[in-house]
Image 1 (cartoon, rainbow, N blue to C red):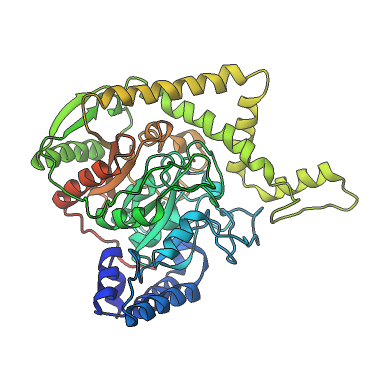
Image 2: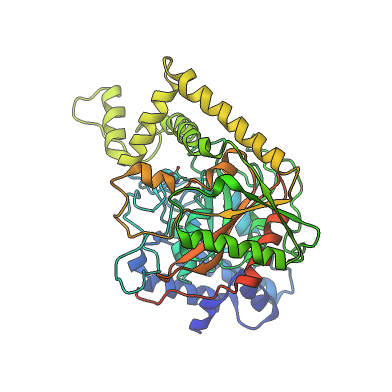
Length: 493
Ligand code: GLN
């Protein structure tokens, strides 16, 4: 039955509903694949019993002739940033090690209500800060991909690197991700899978460990555009418990899928032709334009003039919000408490935070505290907020001329683990094409385009108008159908 693990969300759901196999067989196959893949380090904890219980519930519903839900019988991986009742939730940090929530995040609850089960909690960059999955307290995640002719462990991207690695390795048909400044799209691009960050506010942030609240969005990661559409439908929806949740009905994205782009205009932003971008990435972008023309779209040149300021602005806004959000981890209420002998309250805060946070998290807290401090607030934070507005206005103007934007997802393919982590600025450059859409709160997706000469996947990014996930998914589908991306990593784990 091992071929069950080759199936995606739609094939599993339809196969279970149609009686081709049982949900229990599916859950058992994936549980076994997860157990075999410890070398990837994609999971922090595995929850095979959760997957089996959900599968048995799906099989029982089928026996009673009831509707199984749009994710009925599909076991998924859950990024360990989502609070899961009774299951350790750490954000890949030491400070939250052992924290077992008494509540379920809205997004994960919606997935369970739609019939999904949980294979386990997926590793990530600590507090979702990183682009390579090397900042987790629980160790690096390896990509299942290797560069041709080398054996070095490659980065699955970050921060949703456990999610991307697991889905690419086919030990999970799909996984949740979160994207603050690219953390769904960049890991998807690095591992040859799809991932969509919806419009800010589509998915509830309630019960998701906060990084930068004005940017954080959940979204699905899977191996096809269709699977992302299905899973996003299950995850999205208004939630009164999240003050920034959008009060909008959830469209039927799966039913609305169409790869016919006749009458659509796709914008090509000239500012995304940046120095340092790989030739192969530029080539895939050219190819992407051809594919979309072939699908009936008209390609138009657009300008997003403030693009070059987006990354520096992001690395002020995101750490500023992080420094405030992470003030709550003080040893009093959550996880770790380091109380040296004879220590007072301040000493406990200091000892707990010194031991509990990793270096990258501390760097963000320091940057964030600095840019919010009285003497520097106007020079940095206020300026960054102004740039954020200008970046949004760039997109508004561009969408007067086009329906969606096509760009690379990342400037390079994946890199070996350990090759960039001494150099935070180069690491931050990974997100240069991803953060503008994040600052503007726009829906954006990465779909696999091709493999480069090293045998590593490259992704293309589609950015849409606010609330137009359908347009983004449809453009992604047109690319998927023409790219015919079917490369798979050789199994070494
Ligand atoms: N890599 C970016 C950062 O480290 C984005 C992270 C994210 O989207 N969570 O901030």
